[in-house]
Image (cartoon, rainbow, N blue to C red; front, side, top):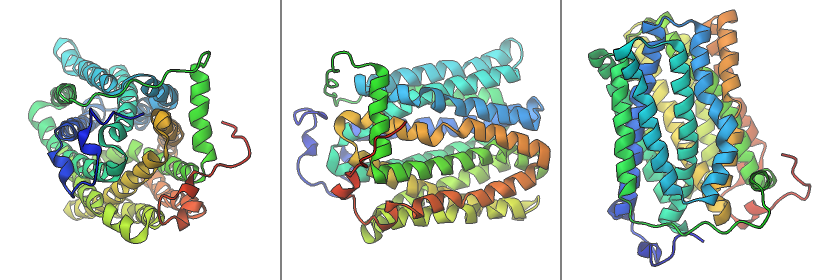
Amino acid sequence: MRGSSQNVPHRSGPHAPGSLWRDRDFRHYAVAQGISVTGSGVTTIALSVLAVVELHASTFNVALIAFASKLPPLLLSLHAGVLADRRRKRPLIITCDLLCAAVLLTLPTAQLLARITLIHLYAVAFTVAALQVIGSNASISFLPSLLGPGRIKDGNAKMGAGNSLADLIGTNSGGALVVALGAARAITVDAASYLASALLLWRIKHREDPPPPRKAGTSQWAEIREGLTYTLRTPVVRSIVLSNTATSFVLAASSALWSLYLLRELHWSPTALGIVMGAGGAGGILGALVWQPLERRWGPGPVMLGALSLNPLAQIPLVLVGPGLGGQIAIGIGMVIQTGAAVCHGGLQRAVRQELAPDELQGRAQATGAWLAFSLRPFAALAAGGLGTWLGLHLTLTLITVALVIPFLVLWNSPVRDMRTVAPAALTVTEEPANP
């Protein structure tokens, strides 16, 4: 069961639009997430500048950093889901926040004591990403317990808008902070954001019910298999997750080379990189604000398909423009469109999957979706690094842009295309046993 009615009195009855912001616990949760996203935006810029500008990393070295940051979902997502379903989720999130702060602080400390190496960057990227896998899965599966089933979509929409605003602030300020403080010292801001997030989450008064008792003799692998079976045998969930997998793979390949291409071949400054990447936050806010009205008007299937169709179109400026202000504006506009579409699609598909998942499977359902969607990202980063070295950055990014059509085609050829509401039929499972 989710939290009891004594713990969550606001869950009974309808709520007026905007009432979530009057919910103290939700405010703490949302602000904690926003602060953390802001700090992560600073680190995104700082790590790129550290690798490309200060350590003069090669194309493949930059891809290895992306590989290190994308490997933990493959290794840990399924186990993180079991952990979230076996324990109360809020303490897990707080612990991961505190550990992330400690790991990030090793970079400015290393600069003070000696010097930063590429090996150190690989280790920090991997460790922080590993902690984020555990903390993020617990955070996503904590939200339905915090809000109750009637407010999940509203909560996801508000979180999407808040996180997009936070990302806008973080990436825009990231370039300025890197210039003012230096890349390593700027990462201290992200460490502080994790500490602030942990404090806000600690102040949440909602208390989760204890997780249901485990069946005698049930192993962790049996619980993982249960989450996989649910995901792979529920048609709508399976289709969404497979489309997410394709999207994640292609965008991981793109992100592995994006900053390197802009900094090295288009000769952007760190400040320009931060401003243009931060422009996506404005699109994210718009995407978060419009997906609920669009979903009510057209249904979840058409809205998700429409959002995916914008992805390849929005990335075209990246491969067509040259250096200079005009190119920066064009890429910034593409970033606004692409991020807006991503937040629109991401918030809606997450809410649909949260509504469909049984209470006792929330952690594993989210973790299995993340594992299937993100497990190939490290190999996408390596493939991008290899292709970028062999074919050049521009041609590789052109091929990646074309490949962004694939996620749309996956979802188009699925039951989601005709999905106008989250109906019980979406829970129908196939008769054939899954083969995870």
